[in-house]
Image (cartoon, rainbow, N blue to C red; front, side, top):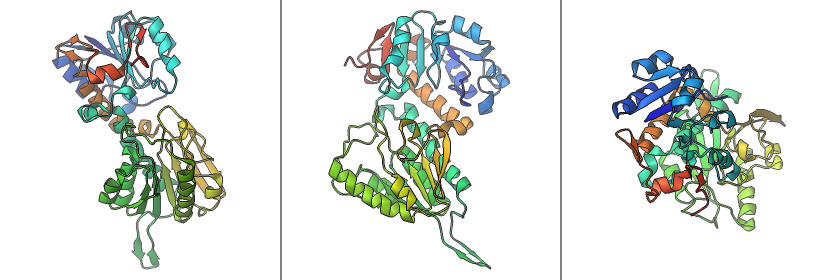
Length: 367
Protein backbone atom coordinates (compact mmCIF):
# COMPACT_ATOMS: atom_id res chain seq x y z
CA UNK A 1 0.00 0.00 0.00
CA UNK A 2 1.05 3.58 -0.61
CA UNK A 3 0.93 5.35 2.76
CA UNK A 4 1.00 9.15 2.53
CA UNK A 5 1.93 11.81 5.08
CA UNK A 6 1.18 15.49 4.50
CA UNK A 7 2.57 18.51 6.31
CA UNK A 8 0.06 19.48 9.00
CA UNK A 9 -1.63 22.88 8.81
CA UNK A 10 -0.79 25.08 11.83
CA UNK A 11 0.72 22.11 13.71
CA UNK A 12 4.44 21.36 14.05
CA UNK A 13 3.92 17.62 14.52
CA UNK A 14 4.09 14.98 11.80
CA UNK A 15 2.03 11.78 11.74
CA UNK A 16 4.81 9.36 10.74
CA UNK A 17 8.49 9.85 11.57
CA UNK A 18 11.34 8.35 9.47
CA UNK A 19 11.96 5.47 11.88
CA UNK A 20 8.37 4.24 11.55
CA UNK A 21 8.31 4.96 7.81
CA UNK A 22 11.19 2.49 7.49
CA UNK A 23 9.17 -0.13 9.41
CA UNK A 24 6.22 0.26 7.00
CA UNK A 25 8.53 -0.06 3.99
CA UNK A 26 10.03 -3.25 5.41
CA UNK A 27 6.48 -4.63 5.51
CA UNK A 28 5.99 -4.26 1.73
CA UNK A 29 4.46 -0.77 1.75
CA UNK A 30 5.55 2.47 0.14
CA UNK A 31 5.69 5.68 2.18
CA UNK A 32 5.06 9.00 0.44
CA UNK A 33 5.96 12.17 2.33
CA UNK A 34 5.19 15.75 1.41
CA UNK A 35 8.25 17.98 1.17
CA UNK A 36 9.17 19.40 4.61
CA UNK A 37 6.34 17.50 6.32
CA UNK A 38 8.49 16.71 9.35
CA UNK A 39 10.80 19.70 9.36
CA UNK A 40 9.17 21.53 12.30
CA UNK A 41 9.34 18.32 14.35
CA UNK A 42 13.10 18.07 13.59
CA UNK A 43 12.77 15.34 10.94
CA UNK A 44 14.11 16.64 7.61
CA UNK A 45 13.52 15.26 4.13
CA UNK A 46 16.94 13.59 4.09
CA UNK A 47 15.97 11.45 7.09
CA UNK A 48 12.88 10.24 5.21
CA UNK A 49 14.76 9.44 2.02
CA UNK A 50 17.42 7.58 4.00
CA UNK A 51 14.61 5.53 5.55
CA UNK A 52 13.42 4.61 2.05
CA UNK A 53 10.45 6.98 1.78
CA UNK A 54 9.66 9.05 -1.31
CA UNK A 55 9.57 12.82 -0.70
CA UNK A 56 7.34 14.68 -3.14
CA UNK A 57 4.96 17.58 -3.66
CA UNK A 58 1.45 17.59 -2.20
CA UNK A 59 -0.06 17.28 -5.68
CA UNK A 60 1.97 14.16 -6.50
CA UNK A 61 1.21 12.57 -3.15
CA UNK A 62 -2.55 13.11 -3.33
CA UNK A 63 -2.60 11.59 -6.82
CA UNK A 64 -0.93 8.34 -5.72
CA UNK A 65 -1.80 7.80 -2.04
CA UNK A 66 -3.93 4.87 -0.90
CA UNK A 67 -3.79 5.48 2.88
CA UNK A 68 -3.45 9.08 4.02
CA UNK A 69 -2.31 9.50 7.63
CA UNK A 70 -2.75 12.83 9.38
CA UNK A 71 -2.98 14.12 12.94
CA UNK A 72 -5.69 16.70 12.22
CA UNK A 73 -8.49 15.82 9.78
CA UNK A 74 -7.79 17.02 6.23
CA UNK A 75 -9.86 19.86 4.84
CA UNK A 76 -12.10 19.83 1.78
CA UNK A 77 -9.31 20.86 -0.59
CA UNK A 78 -7.47 17.62 0.27
CA UNK A 79 -10.42 15.25 0.64
CA UNK A 80 -11.87 16.31 -2.73
CA UNK A 81 -8.65 15.33 -4.49
CA UNK A 82 -8.39 11.81 -3.11
CA UNK A 83 -9.43 8.83 -5.18
CA UNK A 84 -12.51 6.79 -4.25
CA UNK A 85 -11.76 4.17 -1.62
CA UNK A 86 -8.75 6.02 -0.21
CA UNK A 87 -8.37 5.39 3.54
CA UNK A 88 -7.99 8.54 5.62
CA UNK A 89 -6.61 8.15 9.15
CA UNK A 90 -6.80 11.12 11.55
CA UNK A 91 -8.42 12.52 14.71
CA UNK A 92 -11.85 13.30 13.25
CA UNK A 93 -13.71 13.51 16.62
CA UNK A 94 -17.17 12.68 15.19
CA UNK A 95 -18.64 12.73 18.70
CA UNK A 96 -18.04 16.50 18.75
CA UNK A 97 -19.46 17.13 15.28
CA UNK A 98 -20.89 14.20 13.27
CA UNK A 99 -21.09 16.45 10.20
CA UNK A 100 -17.32 16.17 9.83
CA UNK A 101 -17.93 12.79 8.18
CA UNK A 102 -20.27 14.07 5.46
CA UNK A 103 -17.62 15.27 3.03
CA UNK A 104 -15.45 12.12 3.09
CA UNK A 105 -18.65 10.11 2.67
CA UNK A 106 -19.61 12.17 -0.40
CA UNK A 107 -16.22 11.37 -1.94
CA UNK A 108 -16.64 7.66 -1.12
CA UNK A 109 -13.61 7.58 1.16
CA UNK A 110 -12.96 5.33 4.14
CA UNK A 111 -12.32 7.16 7.43
CA UNK A 112 -10.46 5.68 10.40
CA UNK A 113 -10.92 8.04 13.35
CA UNK A 114 -8.11 7.60 15.87
CA UNK A 115 -10.13 9.07 18.75
CA UNK A 116 -12.68 6.28 18.30
CA UNK A 117 -10.19 3.49 19.03
CA UNK A 118 -11.68 1.80 22.12
CA UNK A 119 -9.75 2.47 25.31
CA UNK A 120 -9.27 -1.19 26.16
CA UNK A 121 -6.22 -3.22 27.15
CA UNK A 122 -5.84 -4.63 23.63
CA UNK A 123 -5.62 -1.12 22.17
CA UNK A 124 -3.37 0.59 24.71
CA UNK A 125 -0.36 0.59 22.39
CA UNK A 126 -2.34 2.49 19.72
CA UNK A 127 -4.07 5.04 21.99
CA UNK A 128 -3.00 8.38 20.53
CA UNK A 129 -5.24 10.28 22.96
CA UNK A 130 -3.29 8.93 25.92
CA UNK A 131 0.06 9.60 24.24
CA UNK A 132 -0.82 13.21 23.48
CA UNK A 133 -2.38 13.69 26.92
CA UNK A 134 0.85 12.55 28.54
CA UNK A 135 2.84 15.12 26.57
CA UNK A 136 0.28 17.82 27.42
CA UNK A 137 0.38 16.98 31.14
CA UNK A 138 4.15 17.36 31.19
CA UNK A 139 4.12 20.60 29.20
CA UNK A 140 1.36 22.06 31.41
CA UNK A 141 3.75 21.95 34.37
CA UNK A 142 6.56 23.49 32.30
CA UNK A 143 4.19 26.29 31.26
CA UNK A 144 3.14 26.84 34.85
CA UNK A 145 6.75 27.06 36.03
CA UNK A 146 7.51 29.55 33.27
CA UNK A 147 4.69 31.87 34.38
CA UNK A 148 5.00 31.35 38.12
CA UNK A 149 6.96 34.14 39.85
CA UNK A 150 8.52 31.75 42.38
CA UNK A 151 10.45 28.49 42.74
CA UNK A 152 8.78 25.08 42.53
CA UNK A 153 11.03 23.19 45.00
CA UNK A 154 11.89 24.00 48.60
CA UNK A 155 15.24 25.77 48.83
CA UNK A 156 17.49 26.55 51.74
CA UNK A 157 19.80 29.48 51.03
CA UNK A 158 22.04 31.83 52.95
CA UNK A 159 19.26 34.39 52.62
CA UNK A 160 16.68 32.08 54.16
CA UNK A 161 14.44 29.14 53.31
CA UNK A 162 11.86 29.08 50.54
CA UNK A 163 8.90 26.72 50.93
CA UNK A 164 7.86 24.51 47.97
CA UNK A 165 5.09 25.53 45.62
CA UNK A 166 1.66 23.99 46.12
CA UNK A 167 0.09 22.45 43.03
CA UNK A 168 -3.54 21.38 42.67
CA UNK A 169 -4.39 19.12 39.73
CA UNK A 170 -8.03 18.68 38.75
CA UNK A 171 -8.56 15.47 36.79
CA UNK A 172 -6.24 12.51 37.32
CA UNK A 173 -6.42 10.85 33.93
CA UNK A 174 -3.32 10.44 31.76
CA UNK A 175 -2.63 14.19 31.51
CA UNK A 176 -3.31 14.75 35.19
CA UNK A 177 -1.09 11.90 36.34
CA UNK A 178 1.76 13.12 34.14
CA UNK A 179 1.28 16.59 35.64
CA UNK A 180 1.41 15.04 39.12
CA UNK A 181 4.63 13.18 38.35
CA UNK A 182 6.28 16.20 36.70
CA UNK A 183 5.30 18.53 39.53
CA UNK A 184 6.65 16.09 42.12
CA UNK A 185 9.92 15.66 40.19
CA UNK A 186 10.32 19.42 40.32
CA UNK A 187 9.83 19.52 44.07
CA UNK A 188 6.27 20.79 44.46
CA UNK A 189 3.74 19.65 47.06
CA UNK A 190 0.90 18.17 45.02
CA UNK A 191 -2.78 17.47 45.55
CA UNK A 192 -4.96 15.89 42.87
CA UNK A 193 -8.72 15.57 42.53
CA UNK A 194 -10.78 13.23 40.36
CA UNK A 195 -14.35 11.93 40.42
CA UNK A 196 -13.02 8.46 39.60
CA UNK A 197 -12.01 6.69 42.79
CA UNK A 198 -9.84 4.34 40.75
CA UNK A 199 -7.42 7.26 40.34
CA UNK A 200 -6.72 7.48 44.07
CA UNK A 201 -4.15 4.70 44.18
CA UNK A 202 -2.33 6.04 41.12
CA UNK A 203 -2.18 9.57 42.53
CA UNK A 204 -0.86 8.39 45.87
CA UNK A 205 1.72 6.11 44.23
CA UNK A 206 3.23 9.23 42.64
CA UNK A 207 3.62 10.90 46.02
CA UNK A 208 0.64 13.24 45.84
CA UNK A 209 -2.38 13.58 48.09
CA UNK A 210 -5.74 12.54 46.66
CA UNK A 211 -8.56 15.02 47.28
CA UNK A 212 -11.79 13.08 47.64
CA UNK A 213 -15.36 14.34 47.50
CA UNK A 214 -17.86 11.74 48.62
CA UNK A 215 -20.81 10.70 46.45
CA UNK A 216 -19.22 10.77 42.97
CA UNK A 217 -20.79 8.94 40.05
CA UNK A 218 -17.93 6.70 38.97
CA UNK A 219 -18.54 5.36 35.43
CA UNK A 220 -15.90 2.73 34.70
CA UNK A 221 -17.11 2.47 31.09
CA UNK A 222 -16.48 6.12 30.21
CA UNK A 223 -13.25 5.36 28.37
CA UNK A 224 -11.06 7.46 30.62
CA UNK A 225 -13.29 10.54 30.50
CA UNK A 226 -15.09 12.21 33.37
CA UNK A 227 -18.85 11.75 33.66
CA UNK A 228 -21.64 14.15 34.54
CA UNK A 229 -22.25 14.48 38.29
CA UNK A 230 -25.30 15.30 40.41
CA UNK A 231 -26.11 18.86 41.46
CA UNK A 232 -25.46 18.04 45.15
CA UNK A 233 -22.08 16.54 44.33
CA UNK A 234 -21.10 19.56 42.24
CA UNK A 235 -21.86 21.86 45.16
CA UNK A 236 -19.64 19.87 47.53
CA UNK A 237 -16.98 19.62 44.85
CA UNK A 238 -17.01 23.37 44.22
CA UNK A 239 -16.63 24.22 47.89
CA UNK A 240 -13.65 21.89 48.31
CA UNK A 241 -11.95 23.00 45.11
CA UNK A 242 -12.30 26.64 46.14
CA UNK A 243 -10.74 25.86 49.50
CA UNK A 244 -7.79 24.03 47.92
CA UNK A 245 -7.32 26.50 45.05
CA UNK A 246 -7.12 29.45 47.44
CA UNK A 247 -3.98 27.90 48.94
CA UNK A 248 -2.42 26.73 45.65
CA UNK A 249 0.31 28.41 43.65
CA UNK A 250 -0.60 26.41 40.54
CA UNK A 251 -3.86 24.81 39.41
CA UNK A 252 -3.80 22.49 36.40
CA UNK A 253 -7.18 21.42 35.04
CA UNK A 254 -7.64 18.45 32.71
CA UNK A 255 -11.28 17.32 33.07
CA UNK A 256 -13.20 16.77 29.83
CA UNK A 257 -16.54 15.19 28.99
CA UNK A 258 -16.56 13.31 25.70
CA UNK A 259 -18.69 15.18 23.18
CA UNK A 260 -19.90 17.70 25.78
CA UNK A 261 -18.67 21.04 27.17
CA UNK A 262 -15.91 20.71 29.76
CA UNK A 263 -17.19 20.75 33.36
CA UNK A 264 -16.83 24.06 35.19
CA UNK A 265 -14.52 23.47 38.16
CA UNK A 266 -12.90 26.85 38.84
CA UNK A 267 -15.33 29.79 39.02
CA UNK A 268 -14.47 33.47 38.83
CA UNK A 269 -15.16 33.66 42.57
CA UNK A 270 -12.56 30.92 43.13
CA UNK A 271 -10.00 32.76 41.00
CA UNK A 272 -10.63 35.92 43.03
CA UNK A 273 -9.67 34.04 46.19
CA UNK A 274 -6.38 32.72 44.75
CA UNK A 275 -2.96 34.16 45.58
CA UNK A 276 -1.52 36.99 43.49
CA UNK A 277 0.99 35.41 41.10
CA UNK A 278 -0.85 32.08 41.01
CA UNK A 279 -1.16 30.26 37.69
CA UNK A 280 -3.97 28.19 36.17
CA UNK A 281 -3.25 25.97 33.16
CA UNK A 282 -6.50 24.80 31.55
CA UNK A 283 -6.08 21.82 29.22
CA UNK A 284 -9.82 21.68 28.54
CA UNK A 285 -9.87 25.13 26.93
CA UNK A 286 -11.21 24.00 23.55
CA UNK A 287 -14.26 22.51 25.28
CA UNK A 288 -15.08 25.77 27.06
CA UNK A 289 -12.54 25.28 29.82
CA UNK A 290 -12.67 24.03 33.39
CA UNK A 291 -12.07 27.61 34.55
CA UNK A 292 -14.82 30.16 34.03
CA UNK A 293 -12.33 32.79 32.80
CA UNK A 294 -10.41 30.59 30.35
CA UNK A 295 -10.00 31.69 26.74
CA UNK A 296 -8.62 29.08 24.35
CA UNK A 297 -5.12 29.82 23.03
CA UNK A 298 -4.82 32.90 25.24
CA UNK A 299 -3.27 33.89 28.55
CA UNK A 300 -5.77 35.84 30.66
CA UNK A 301 -4.59 37.92 33.62
CA UNK A 302 -7.28 38.38 36.27
CA UNK A 303 -6.82 39.77 39.76
CA UNK A 304 -3.13 38.84 39.74
CA UNK A 305 -3.76 35.28 38.48
CA UNK A 306 -2.52 34.06 35.08
CA UNK A 307 -4.95 31.72 33.29
CA UNK A 308 -3.40 29.79 30.40
CA UNK A 309 -5.90 28.23 28.00
CA UNK A 310 -4.33 25.59 25.76
CA UNK A 311 -5.91 22.31 24.65
CA UNK A 312 -3.11 21.46 22.23
CA UNK A 313 0.03 21.58 24.33
CA UNK A 314 1.24 18.33 22.77
CA UNK A 315 1.90 20.22 19.54
CA UNK A 316 4.38 22.45 21.39
CA UNK A 317 6.67 19.42 21.88
CA UNK A 318 6.57 18.23 18.26
CA UNK A 319 9.56 15.88 18.22
CA UNK A 320 8.48 13.51 20.98
CA UNK A 321 4.77 14.01 20.33
CA UNK A 322 5.36 12.93 16.70
CA UNK A 323 7.45 9.98 17.85
CA UNK A 324 4.72 8.73 20.18
CA UNK A 325 1.92 9.39 17.68
CA UNK A 326 3.83 7.59 14.95
CA UNK A 327 4.42 4.53 17.13
CA UNK A 328 0.70 4.46 17.96
CA UNK A 329 -0.05 4.51 14.22
CA UNK A 330 2.32 1.62 13.60
CA UNK A 331 0.60 -0.48 16.26
CA UNK A 332 -2.86 0.48 14.97
CA UNK A 333 -2.00 -0.49 11.41
CA UNK A 334 -0.99 -3.97 12.59
CA UNK A 335 -4.69 -4.63 13.10
CA UNK A 336 -5.64 -4.21 9.43
CA UNK A 337 -2.48 -3.91 7.29
CA UNK A 338 -0.35 -7.00 6.77
CA UNK A 339 2.23 -7.56 4.02
CA UNK A 340 0.96 -4.52 2.16
CA UNK A 341 -2.66 -5.71 2.10
CA UNK A 342 -5.56 -4.02 3.93
CA UNK A 343 -8.24 -6.13 5.63
CA UNK A 344 -10.86 -4.05 7.46
CA UNK A 345 -12.67 -6.81 9.33
CA UNK A 346 -15.98 -5.23 10.44
CA UNK A 347 -16.26 -7.71 13.31
CA UNK A 348 -12.91 -6.78 14.85
CA UNK A 349 -13.58 -4.74 17.99
CA UNK A 350 -11.04 -2.04 17.16
CA UNK A 351 -12.03 -1.72 13.50
CA UNK A 352 -15.73 -1.76 14.35
CA UNK A 353 -15.28 1.26 16.65
CA UNK A 354 -12.76 3.30 14.66
CA UNK A 355 -13.89 2.79 11.05
CA UNK A 356 -16.50 5.55 11.03
CA UNK A 357 -16.94 5.74 7.24
CA UNK A 358 -16.47 2.78 4.91
CA UNK A 359 -16.26 3.50 1.18
CA UNK A 360 -18.70 6.37 1.53
CA UNK A 361 -21.05 4.69 4.00
CA UNK A 362 -21.20 6.46 7.37
CA UNK A 363 -20.97 3.85 10.09
CA UNK A 364 -20.54 6.14 13.07
CA UNK A 365 -23.59 5.98 15.31
CA UNK A 366 -24.98 2.93 13.52
CA UNK A 367 -24.09 0.42 16.25
